[in-house]
Image 1 (tube, rainbow, N blue to C red):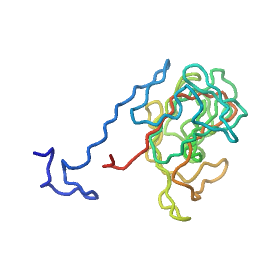
Image 2 (image 1 turned 90 degrees about the vertical axis):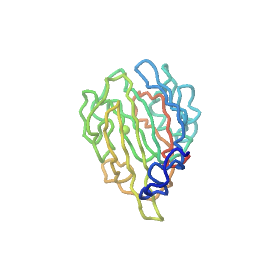
Image 3 (image 1 turned 180 degrees about the horizontal axis):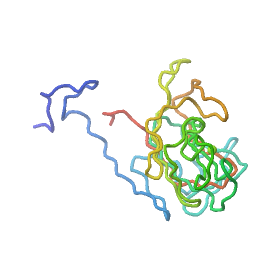
Image 4 (image 1 turned 135 degrees about the vertical axis):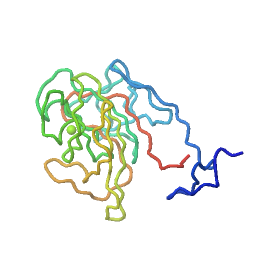
Length: 246
Ligand code: MG
């Protein structure tokens, strides 16, 4: 007695019968725990941890080691002027988890308040900004696909409080010089959807239209030094795989 059926129709686009007991079992993953304002949660058992609060060993600066600083609460903080940092790990399609807090001391306005950014593959920015009672141009709001799409809503917590990004990223695909599939992203922010399967127009630009140019299928995660004391914690990802992959 098998687990399922093999006298049922084949599901279109697959090699499997409806309720096929021979179909690969989903891999077992032990879920993590959610973060709260006091402490970061834990990642799922198969996550690849990029930052757990203990070291910057997994990161590099523009020319040498990452120069941001570790701070209390298992976090790291931008050291203004030291530049963006990026992961040594390069990866493509993924589920990405990133938490950040805007500076407690509120200064500046619009793009000058608590600016940083999450750059997928080092190229595609999901904006990080203190947008709590701080209007700016909509496609530069926190959670915006910078310069392309504003977030569906502004769900920012107060400065100093932790915000949570959960991002589903599918990078673009190129065949030679040709774009065969644009990048696509779904973004949850503090449990609120900001983008749902949104197709990107190209790598992030400032005051210009975005445009695709061929690049590898993997790249680093990059965090932006925009001169503000933004903190990050609990950064991890899981590669996004196809169905039926053990
Ligand atoms: Mg930014």
